[in-house]
Image 1 (cartoon, rainbow, N blue to C red):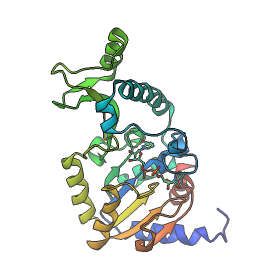
Image 2 (image 1 turned 180 degrees about the vertical axis):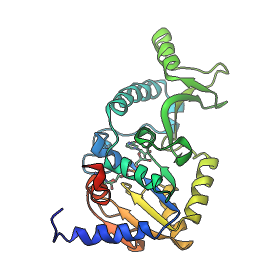
Image 3 (image 1 turned 45 degrees about the horizontal axis):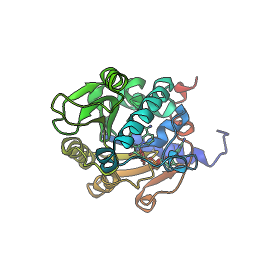
Image 4 (image 1 turned 90 degrees about the vertical axis):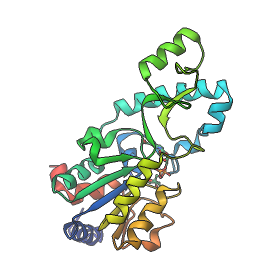
Length: 256
Ligand code: NAD
């Protein structure tokens, strides 16, 4: 950024809020991973402009939908594996190392926060992750290697030992959120002194309620998102800029 760039004031204000905080909670969405090469859903190049997501109800009702869901899952996991954490993910690790970050609540299923260096106890994955399968009946887990082997051997979607359908261990559209992850996320939001939304359209409930819970409990709210969100009017500071550039400005050591 140039010395007289108006963005400097935003970064200074953001830094001031972070330095004044002891319990920062970040809510991250698909937008934090686009600069790592993983498309978001609702941005201009979002996946929704190309493919319609398979809902939980469609998965349970149709073998074709299940096979298509697993096919897409394996393709997506290859994209996740090839992706590298970017300045946004690494900036949150810097914040954690400074002792200010209480929790990252993520809607993402790509595992990039952990690969950037956050411990699993520092991340609440409210939509699960796509590293394994889970039975929709008894909740037993199945490794992806076993899922693939069953599909190859039977030509059909995998079944659990109990007979239940096995779906990737993520929360699909139309599926109920796990109450333990959501109540932990709500507790952290209510205890935050600074709540930062990074790369979320804030259109998916109940995650989109978390910034309001934080705000009503007295936290400052910062939104870092290229496009406007329904909660912009509630924010103390909004940065409509690319996430990587914001975090590279905040933590110059990430790029030097
Ligand atoms: P979303 O797609 O609804 O919104 C992403 C937002 O990020 C958009 O408003 C977009 O303008 C903004 N954005 C994108 N790239 C940006 C950048 N580089 N800098 C600044 N802003 C940027 O995402 P969501 O709110 O997380 O909801 C989508 C749902 O889809 C989530 O629930 C998630 O589970 C799932 N999803 C996950 C991944 C992933 O794991 N990486 C990817 C796609 C979708």
